[in-house]
Image (cartoon, rainbow, N blue to C red; front, side):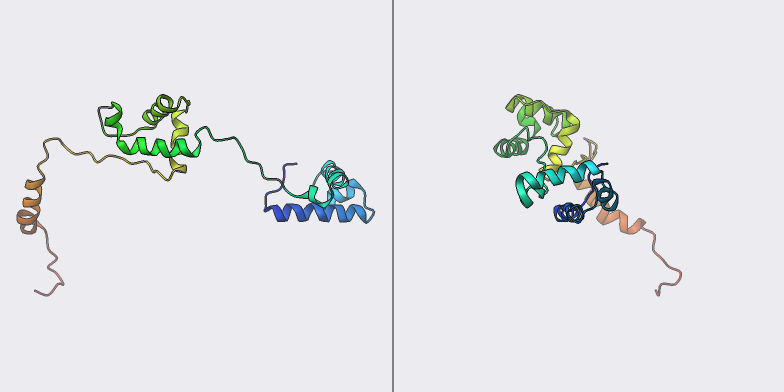
Length: 164
């Protein structure tokens, strides 16, 4: 059986209840049935209590895999990213996960898969952005002029129920 989900306090309380039942004279199998766990877990908790007392019943934190980039390297990476891709030799001003993975490999000597770079950037509170697609021939002044002069003349107005 996998470990139940819940806070450390709930799991610790469950272990204490199991050992209280065991102290009351119930068998390992009966305690496991009543608590909802394997008898081997009850036996493991019993043995841990014998060796280390009540402190041994505490739920331990599992830290997981250590980070590839430490905090200082992450700060330096953010500064490098803020300089922009063109400062690092790319033709366009767009960071992709593949480009960021290449930057990390070149600057820090650490290999990241481009799919994992997205998770790394999310942990740094960076979000994916899509560039606005605009034509190179676009004339912003002409657009503003058209919006101010022609658009109000062309725009359809509600006439039916609106007072004139």
